[in-house]
Length: 152
Image (cartoon, rainbow, N blue to C red; front, side):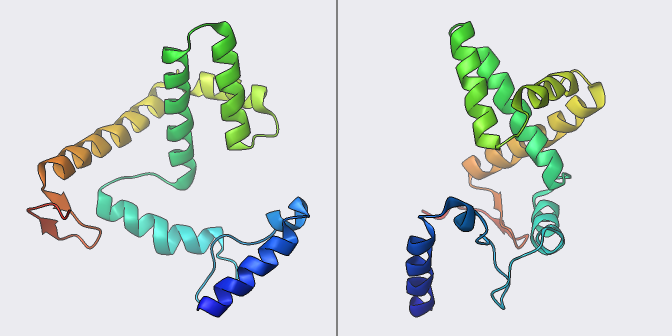
């Protein structure tokens, strides 16, 4: 294991001089060392974790939830138009959107869609309930067991 990590680090160091080559290195690997496909991630990791957490969202919806909340926060806390513009540009860069301004306009439109807002509100409500349960020490673990005291 340690040898493979060292090899990977050496290889990554060599590849760091070529960002395009580095971008092709898979981040998540299967047990056999191959790249983890999006389908396997969704079916074997994402969906079981959400089921156990009591959430109903696919990765695409979660991405929308994140961006929608980020935009709400940016708009609510921006000091002025220049700050708003700068922070939206930072979000575009973070999300790596090729057509950032156009994508932001789509999100601004989607935020006004009642069904989409209702779905995001449901996710938010479930997450708040889980945070309250965690804070009170009644945490449902990933395996589904209920813990009556927090581990510190």
